[in-house]
Image (cartoon, rainbow, N blue to C red):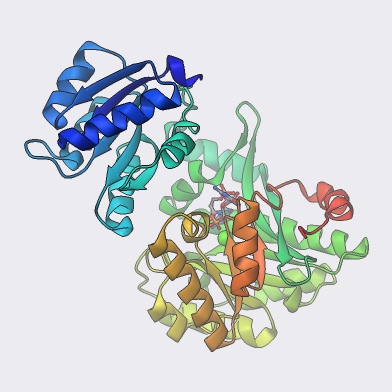
Length: 395
Ligand code: C2E
Ligand code: CA
């Protein structure tokens, strides 16, 4: 969209700053600029006209920026938002997170003074609102649908490469479950994993994925790729004390060794049978499986788990990796997670590597393994060999 066609609303109580912003926008080529002195005036303005980009201060007498954001978020105003404030970056960033949580398309935050360069960069990110894709939670499946799908083995793992950051070599792939639905096509796990957990059928999915992931890993290795496979495990599956022996048999039946498989665990609910879970985890570790603490830094994936479970790998949650370059707090969490991994002798893995700059940051920070869209999206097992042959690590 050309800047001359974009309609701006500048929400700023400080007259001098408001005028300066308006001038800056006009110098950048803007032709439609409206002004408001606080949140209430801005809401009034939005009632009478369509706005594409709102540039708002946080601190204002009357209705402040936070309340204004809540109102536009709840009303579903389709405008994009740029925040500007004199406050420190972590505070502005947390209001940014709040705006996103209200469903607002946040273009970014500027710590004052606003410059034409920063403003132009954020305006360049604006895109007219598209029709939003249906949210995964809108897809609901009955218990009967899921039972049929489990019985027919309609679940398939897709695989996302795991790359050794220092050497750039392929060292494994994570199995991510997909439901190959006869009518709806490929369905992502957010639409069925929670339902399987709730119906206590997650174990059935786990065994299907373990079986197919082990078979895929066998094929890759037979084709000359020296790589391992990672599988997501619900802690619920570990309540059964026979789990470790059964998964060892499954792996060996494919001619693999336990060291070729890593089990990624996230604690999503408070566990009551922790003793049995720990028994299984200790046994898996003794047998030689890799054990990864998944989504590290979120929910229950915490320091307490690190001290009681014999992990071999720490997987930093993608939310910190993706935002490390924009948010100081995420970068600090990423750096300290890598530091903890190093001090505990764990392999550090970063997921959610979306851009070249994320990859470079991880390289500089000495992270061991990276995974993310910058490297590859999850793919079918049969595509891995072709992908690996074409893969060239970024310089
Ligand atoms: P997870 O284990 O944290 O897996 C990483 C998710 O991030 C995957 O989503 C992956 O496709 C996505 N991802 C990878 N790289 C990027 C990136 O650069 N940017 C962004 N934005 N996302 C990226 P997916 O496949 O939709 O899986 C979602 C979650 O479902 C997984 O999160 C995992 O917790 C769960 N899940 C998947 N397969 C299984 C399974 O077989 N069993 C169980 N219990 N849970 C599973
Ligand atoms: Ca995972």
